[in-house]
Image 1 (tube, one colour):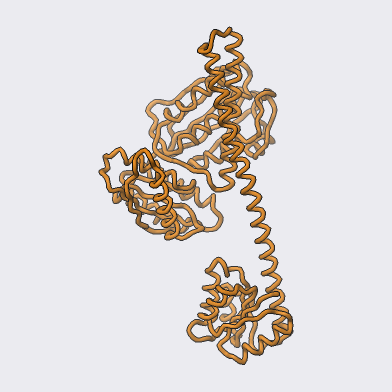
Image 2 (cartoon, one colour):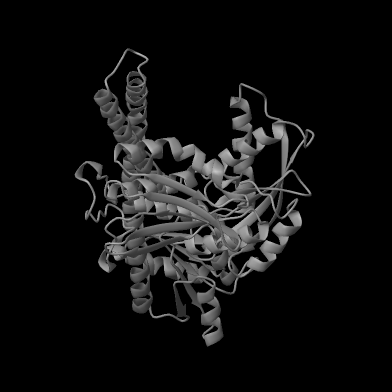
Length: 500
């Protein structure tokens, strides 16, 4: 039975409306004013509210606005029922969130038609909400399956790779030159499969909003060194010379080292797949304007305009020029685009048929003004509506020179989500930039503090020190970008170094 709440300080009006509504088969409750309506709605959750405007303690306009602020009552249709009939009154009610407006004295048939329409809208919303909950449950189940399968793949892949390396290196006994070559191919294919597993896992985490980003200051050499051995094996197994042309004196950059390495790895593996044998693939890096540009250049078949149009779509494979034993799931370039974006960079492609392709991406330097600008631009692109960005100061009760500083910084990064940053501070040890708009700053702070205490309880090697966390403020993007950037500059220790 559809539930209707009548909010009116006049008892005769309430009784008349109750009689009309019950004749139509509705379940009815009453509230004597705006304050009382908030209580009844919280306890009873009606499907439709009929709200008078002129009432003591709290009028209908204020009560309507307050009900629209609460998640549990936001979608309940509110029909304003008032003797006021001016355009300004109607506009004020609708601006407060009212679904409809009916003037007194009302025509019963007209009012009942409005109530039926409002009830139908609420019923449709409830149906869609239930469907969304079911879809979310299916999504969560699928994500958990992919997550479990991906993790289950890792152990046997590691075992296969390690024992193949032991045999290839002659540790378990002598091997022939051909056997060594075959084992190298096995190891290279295991690396391919491991990369696919990582891509699958990151895609599922991105979809679920659970992908972590540990952005911090690092060098291009650190990024490249971590992936170079695997790339050299892959290139050698395919007969491709792999060249490194890294410009000297590059500035330090700000990114998640593992994710930036994954971008280079995916691009280079893709270039190796498409390159003819003995055709070199070059990984290069050079300084740019507020960034370092990293690229991968090959001499493969190139990509036509039709291919470029779908290049970064998930599960798309161009196919031309790639060896049949090197095809994957078509996730590599899709995840490359997302990881570059999460590292506050931009991705570029230049290709010419029969001449080859160059994929390049930017990584911001550690200049805080550059990072703040890219960060707010990223928030505006990624989040629908007007996102909030908040700042929280974190202080640690140990000397700044303590080795614990690195440990605490890493721990803080592990607690935050991919829209968040950790920066070195001047007035405090760190400043957290929280780029979310689904919760208030107080709720976010409480969640981070809770997670910190849980993390401290689980640390066994060395106890983490107590930290204090204090809110700084919240800014609306893009309207308050300039104010937010100025505040970051005032809070950070120095413009060259950030962590997050």
